[in-house]
Image (tube, rainbow, N blue to C red; front, side, top):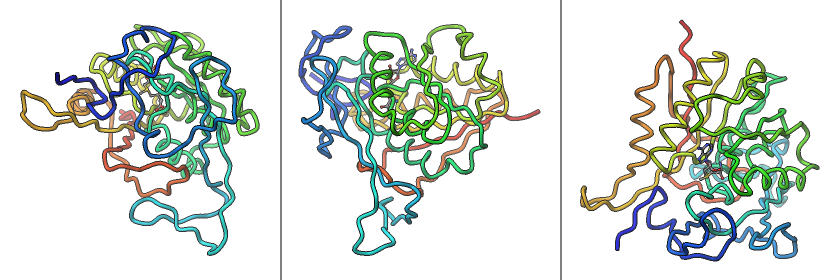
Length: 301
Ligand SMILES: C[S@@+](CC[C@H](N)C(=O)[O-])C[C@H]1O[C@@H](n2cnc3c(N)ncnc32)[C@H](O)[C@@H]1O
């Protein structure tokens, strides 16, 4: 049977087990593709919960000074010298039901982390960063090396607890405060504790939050609301276009991404542009051609 969801056929894997929220249906398990490409899992590290693993994501320190080749790979300037690296340890699941994908790490998070490392100097000092749909928290942890961060997601199962544990695990890297808060796109209001901080937020980030049309619609409404509440914010959204074979088109299409583009076109008083991916890859992952980064800002009247 042709099974369709936002992750496409490639993202579907039969269950590796799990405990939380609807994880008993083994046929509906999804796994992030990144673990097929690199072996990030560090079996010497202990996860806090059963059925979780710990992965290590190495990245090249930005101070080293790097250039990038046509594929986004780093050209290390000092030949015969290994660039100094740091790493982030992330506890996560290897496979989850679709409503718990936040317990895994997705490729958009690494793209956005690369962008942050490369562009943090052009973001105003003393900025506060707000991340939406943060998942395991890697991008917020990277952001916190430069800025204080409000790291948000839905309060479902272990998602917020997992972020807290990952922030604690990387306290040597988090140079600024990371506050973990609930922000549910489906809710009609932005929580007060976030609204209170908005005058100091100049950057909103989100990775891989486009995979289900009802979530995408609510996500874009949330962004519209946030942009209308404070006009000095820029929003960066990293996405992976997921192609699937559809019987209606008899061809491959990226319906979730097309729906996102429709929502984008319907936004009011918002300017949007695709950001070229010509910045270096500091993390190890495949920067596949399906990855895209968008910048949204308010049109000031
Ligand atoms: C594919 S994961 C991406 C996670 C992380 N940003 C990354 O790239 O690894 C999608 C994220 O959107 C979050 N999400 C789903 N529905 C949401 C909602 N209604 N409100 C807020 N976040 C939601 C999920 O919990 C999850 O963290």
